[in-house]
Image (cartoon, rainbow, N blue to C red; front, side, top):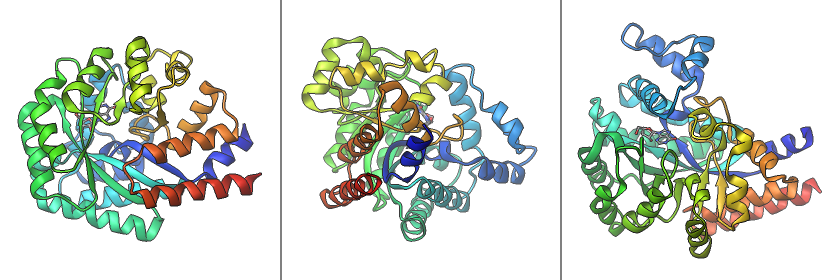
Length: 340
Ligand SMILES: O=c1[nH]cnc2c1ncn2[C@@H]1O[C@H](CO)[C@@H](O)[C@H]1O
């Protein structure tokens, strides 16, 4: 296992499902919480913070998530947060990451959209230069904020479009937030060349994944684990090559699954569904991408070669350029060969 842990650490990787504010390290959260002490329920002390990040259920997780979003007050906070995410990804030998960013939440809290986009772009340049990580953005609609959020997210994506923006998403709760209502916004985003990557089937059943496919033109699905309960859906995802972005520890910590041994990743893989493994909100779930690869290796009974294939799958499912994908795949090949 130690050998596999070392192999995973050195393996060049791509991360396809990781949220912006959900990636704030305890150090950054503490820094922001201390700065805004008295006006935030988020504790600055690491031990208390770990306790604060114990979630009763998915709704509680979203409540806590939004309290951390509240700590981001100006574009300097955004710049610092994003650059530090690049550092952590680089530390794990992640070469390419599609970061789910929710501009609506920050704009609503008073950060101008243009300043927000400039801050993430500055951090993108810094992360490439200083940590060797290529960052791309998925702008997601926070589902709980409804159509006003959809409208504004689309507007920012089209009018203030940062260079790194490649996709359009939908996050937050699924219960009480039907996917089809967002169809016009996804249609417009897709017409503007953005790829469709909604969350679906994380906390509700397979019908939500069908909705994401039929109504939102999903090209990849955030989570999508509910597909394991629908043979026809798994066959469809396999036939059309629509990948799921699976985040095992997230599902455990938000109590979407009762324990990791009941996680459906093996069922999905056995049915031929393309999957990648991702970290979602790593510090909030007490995990890292490296740990998610180790979890997946255990659940799928993979050796080093199998783990390298998981890393290749993430690259192939990504929206990187063909050249970028080829270079990263070559790097993975070189690494596995050198490791013997
Ligand atoms: O696992 C997740 N599922 C859905 N949304 C999430 C998750 N992690 C973070 N967010 C974030 O929750 C916010 C509120 O809608 C959004 O910003 C979304 O990106």
